[in-house]
Image (tube, rainbow, N blue to C red; front, top):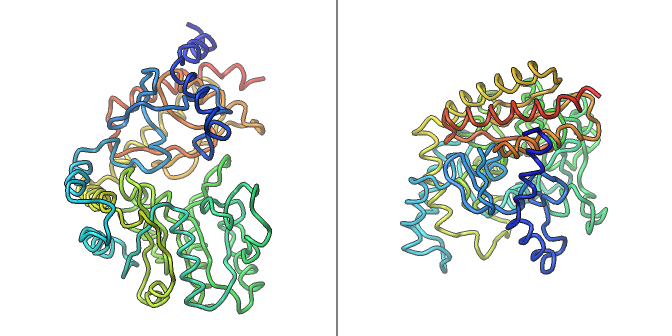
Length: 418
């Protein structure tokens, strides 16, 4: 079966998915929205039926090795038995209650033990909640307005930070100023421009702008950001929503010797259960207690029980080390396949969270075709977002992934040479 026939056959066989898309188009604006909208990606199924470990199955029964981890939340693997048992125990007691369950205190204590900079923790539901809370706390503590963000960085989907300006106003971003990631001179100039009105510098553990090569943090840049915040009294905010508990069992900049004042967490914190957190140091405690932030479901006890089990198991299983080992093997296999098929690629970022792009591919035609072909061969990857290695990835999963990715390189090699 040729590459084109292989992909076309998979798409033709997507009868249940197609029917669900038609039904959704009648009752959901656009049929789907946000980062889960697969309308522009021919090879990607829109609907998933079930998942287990590092595998998932779409509604038409096709099996995939999952290299997206539900876009980051699934770190221990889908339906991890320890996490789900903890969630089930709490569910039997209660979830959405008139007040928090005792698991909230247990979880806060655990985060304070595990996260080096943390003296306290607050909880919410989404990464956007957490980054917004960090900025609010910083403004409450400093009495200042301005927040510095890196050009092109993603910090959530609220009007103040959404990558899509539709429905937002200039006033929503009026108190943002910008610097270039890993460019300390740029950051220093932006800090100076803020004069005495700088409340916070928000920074990602590494640069992971969609559709671009990833950049690991330069230790000098990280240390410089810390020093500038110390000098100005602004909060150094680490947006650990995407990378938290994947790069380090604790804050992602711990290996660099740099501790933030505030950090935003979500995604991997509860292995797919809906939870976010903000952690911070004692100097920011009073401000954190002074702001009004809340949500009807923020104290959901089931997600907190799942998070407690997730963070505990990540440490017990040495999950970061395992993901690095798998990521190293994945990187070696991908680069070997690309070389053998004569395809020039860039493979950047932490090996647990890699990003693959093709050379001479300004419209991303090749990387989209590659991901379509990978999906047709049972490997779930995405052309614009970094991938995620799971702690549940086995040797068999890795072998299946590398076989499928090798076939995808073979399928696009001719197009890559044109």
